[in-house]
Image (cartoon, rainbow, N blue to C red):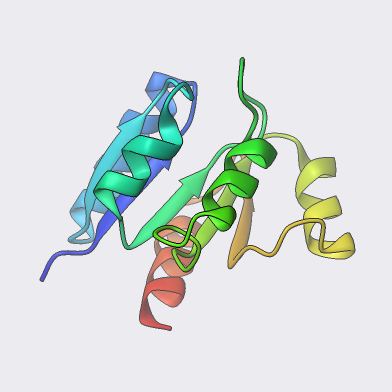
Length: 123
């Protein structure tokens, strides 16, 4: 069965790029470039993995993370943070501000993305 990945990212071009990469690896990718009502949409979808940008307008990735982890239906879904803010990713990894299954700093390579997604989904 095909694994479904939700990518929450305000940059439509990034969604398209990541979708192309991961679809070539056999995944179904659904992109969300508007963070409004995202919790309800992800709860209804219940993807196998969520790729989450941190810096977004209106609702940031930290708020989305907290909302996902507070709902029973979405609390167990693995989350990988993808961000251009290296400092934010370093902070997540070192301070354990949030517990995620992985972090990628933009720009990243195709193999870095594919390997991390495969690793997280195999657990």
